[in-house]
Structure formats: structure tokens, C-alpha cells
Length: 168
Ligand code: RTP
Ligand code: MG
Image 1: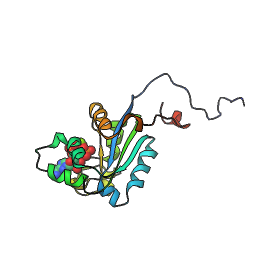
Image 2: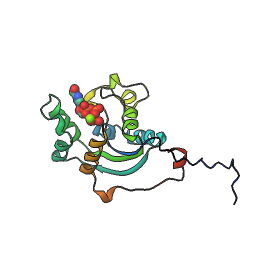
Image 3: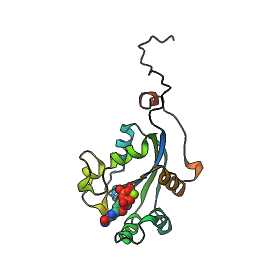
Image 4: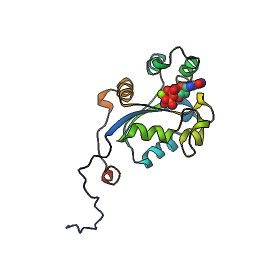
């Protein structure tokens, strides 16, 4: 079929507006226990981000300690390790233009009472120690965290027919 100029095909662009990034997202035990996995995944999907990997798992103390090594020695560290290992989590990798910043914006500030209305931590949280999610905070940490939580062959590179309407 020949397409007319207004057939609904997105314009092609040579311009790369934002780099395609990958970021690690954890739905922490409180998200899972409260039945919020679907709600949070729904928000990331509607934002236009693309799922690359997902794993429902009980976190071993060794993995928790490695993931949160940067916080070792802080007053909240022991509680944080106890929290993340207390019940299953959903670990995921999401991808998109500027995905690291976009996902942290969708999650909201670390303290739910400082998170913007409409963000997950604002809409579903009250306390910093029950703030529902983790998201990588920079390109280097995203790469390290993805490698820590997933094997290379667990990451799925794929495309969606609608991608050209979301990624310029
Ligand atoms: P995350 O790493 O989990 O995405 O959170 P974040 O970047 O927004 O915050 P970060 O400073 O990296 O802290 C990691 C997690 O530790 C807990 N926390 N508790 N009681 C406290 O003062 C305190 N501060 C941090 C939170 O669960 C936070 O997400
Ligand atoms: Mg952090």
C-alpha cells in the first residue's frame, strides 16, 4: 500500500535528542507487599520507557550489601539492608532517551514528603525507609548496578512498532 503524507507515519529524524540509556529499577518489598507492582510498571510503560529485563527475587544479604555499599556506615544502613532483604523485590531494567533522569523523576525525591505530587513516592509513600523503589542515579552507577543484578543474556534488546512516536 502506498502511504500518503498524512498516513500516520512518524517523521524520520536524524537528530538524536537524548541518548538511549538503561537504568536499574527495584520495586522494593513494600511495593510488592502492597500490591503496587502493576501500578508502578504501568506508570513506567505509559511514560514511554521500554522494559529490558525483569526478575522477581528474594535478595540475599550479600547482594544487598554490594548494591548499597556506598551507604555502609551511615545510621540507616542496617535498616536499609533489613528492609531490602525482608521480602521479595522486582528487579528491572528500563530503557529510553534520558531514562536515568526520567525514571528518578517518575519515582520522586528520596523522602516521600519532599517528592512532587504525581510521583510514585509522593502518591504512595510517607517515610524514607519505606519509599517503594530504587532507581540508578547516574550513567556509571546504572552500568554497575545492571551488571550486579542481571547477567548479559537476561537483557533483552527489542523494539516496539510505536517507538518512533515516543523516541525522536
Ligand atoms: P535509591 O538509591 O533507593 O533509588 O534511593 P535514592 O537514590 O533516592 O536515595 P539514596 O540516598 O541512594 O538512599 C538509598 C535508600 O536508603 C534509604 N534511606 N534512608 N533514613 C534515612 O535517612 C534514609 N536515607 C536513605 C532509602 O530507602 C533510600 O531510597
Ligand atoms: Mg540511590
